[in-house]
Length: 243
Image (cartoon, rainbow, N blue to C red; front, side, top):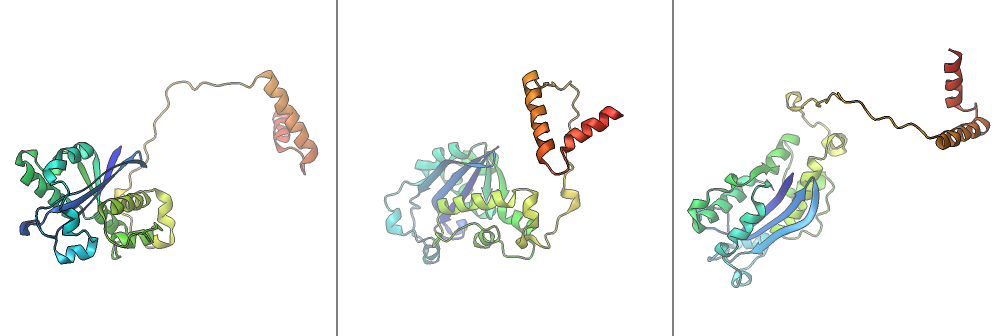
């Protein structure tokens, strides 16, 4: 399965107030492994960055002045994510901004949901850890992901961190027994029974060669002499011969 872990940075919180995307960061995961492939760009939003947003990500108007506008990166972005499963923390926020940019660029494109499946790791974390903090920093602490280099928000950096968090969150049964997971509520109806495939064809049996048999017998004889109580395998074989 091809998955894309995605994050954005914006000029503010609300598209209805004219806020725009200023950074997109995506990292590729294939069969639960980070491939090293990524998509990253800064975008000139053609408007000012709010002071509150600047305090979060530190991306200034001056820095964005010479960056491409969204229409210049839209097709490359869509080509990178098309057909993948998007992993996003608080997906409603990012998809709302992406769809807003799509509408401004080309209304005929349709929403991102028409091109990708969406997984919201915030909703997933709330199901796994109800009543606890589930922001990215809290999840990093819970799953022992090092984010000490994250002083400010950044789309590519946050996508890389979220990829590790997502893989840890969905890493299998072993994670259910960690110290941080005590009291984890699991709905039995949501646990799928393993599928058992019945083997109908004959299995190929490869027998040991005469040389391998000699080596095996020599090894058993050595164990018979050196092991306390003798060689258990030889004792079983002898008992079988008696019966």
